[in-house]
Amino acid sequence: MLFMKESVEASLASHTQGSHMLDTTLSRMDQACDQLRVTEGVRAILRSCERELTVSIPVRLDDGGIAVYKGYRVQHSSVRGPCKGGIRFHPGTNIQEVRALAMLMTLKCAVVNIPLGGAKGGVEVDPSQITLAEQERLTRRYAAMIMPLLGGKRDIPAPDVNTNEQTMAWLMDTISMLQGHGVPEIVTGKPIALGGSQGRIEATGRGVVITTIELLKKLQISPEGVTVAIQGYGNVGRHAAQILQREYGARIIAVSDVSGGIYNAHGIDLLDLNDYVDAHRPGLLAGYADGKRGDEISNDELLTLDVDVLIPAALEEQITEGNADLIQAKMIVEGANGPTNFEADRILEYNNVHVAPDILANAGGVIVSYFEWVQDLQAYFWDVAEVRTRLGKLMCKAFDDVWTLAYERKTSMREAAFLLGTERVAEAIVVRGLFP
Ligand code: NAD
Image 1 (cartoon, rainbow, N blue to C red):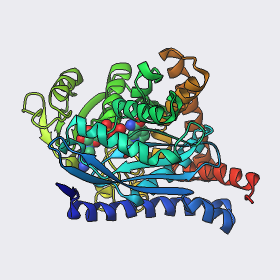
Image 2 (tube, rainbow, N blue to C red):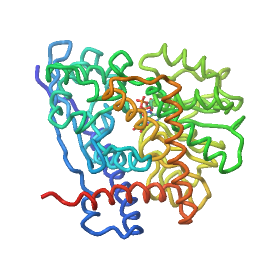
Image 3 (cartoon, helix red, strand yellow):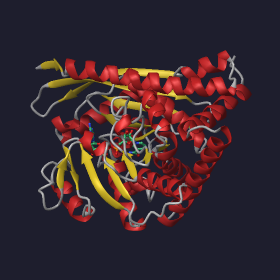
Image 4 (tube, rainbow, N blue to C red):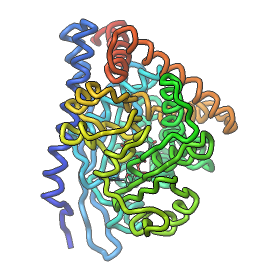
């Protein structure tokens, strides 16, 4: 049996979403270019992606059939260093979304001032609908097909939505087999056993927490007892929740994932929640809210709860002109990429909601990916304390840079972060000059 696996409806809906996100990213970059008086030529370079590859990935299914999935790898900019960015497996991903995410990676690396450019990858697949063995074959075939773009000095993938350490291990093994020798530096977010870094799994969540704490300090609010709602209980949301509660005494009163959510005004018992989620493959919290542990809450309700801190840590385009006016949180710390659209920014600013933008707040992941790459190249590894100290230093420096610029320019943290990132990338474009 030979067939093309795709849902026309899902793909049409997501295409619209991906193009919104690209429009939002381009509008924010344009705004920064206007203020920085970037030349038209440099602006045109910034608005375009350097290199894009679309692949059709045939996969042998367990029942002997074949399914074909669409995959992408997009490099937005290598002007400041090798391209860096995650790979997501999601039925709604598409080329527009991947372009936007690659641009955000370029700006993120520039905001935290690490010598890397921006890329992103995606495969249009719902991994919950295929077996682990099929996921492995899909990953290996995708890796082989995008291999011409990859390399420790060219383009280094990492995990993103629905991909994890195991996915990165398959990717690293595939490229190593094809090259005839081990290439740990070709991918980050690997298992420690293969040259992964201590502290990488928690890194994005820890970076979100560092950003939250720094913002609370500026607003002169003690973290002890602050109320927090988190949308998305995957890699980013779960680690952010744990660290905020365990290390800072924050009260996590609502969390949600794709299957639903829970609300408990006294604070959710995260150890109990984690046991439940781990036992319900593939990590879903549907059915957890039973009245005693907390009440069921929808994703829409979670976003508009009266909390101190709202952390969107799922997907893009969650806070829009449709719900921004209903947001009651004092501050939003963007764990996800692109969770707030351009129109929503204006409403939130008007309503005095502080927004720590994605290209600052979720940069902990790429920072520790950078550390992992450095350790792989040196073949010399650091302990977790060293990783955390270095992560804290870079995150706090970037936070201060953005905060100070926002203050000086009397603008939002989002605009300041885009200004900072765009300026650094534009400067690199200008000083490198054009080849030939
Ligand atoms: P993940 O796959 O581990 O978790 C995603 C979570 O979001 C899951 O709990 C899922 O159920 C939930 N979710 C999906 N659709 C949802 C919906 N419609 N409503 C509510 N919840 C929904 O992914 P992740 O790695 O935690 O990534 C989450 C976000 O953070 C993405 O935007 C990603 O690009 C961004 N990000 C991730 C990293 C990283 O290191 N993993 C780094 C930077 C940014």
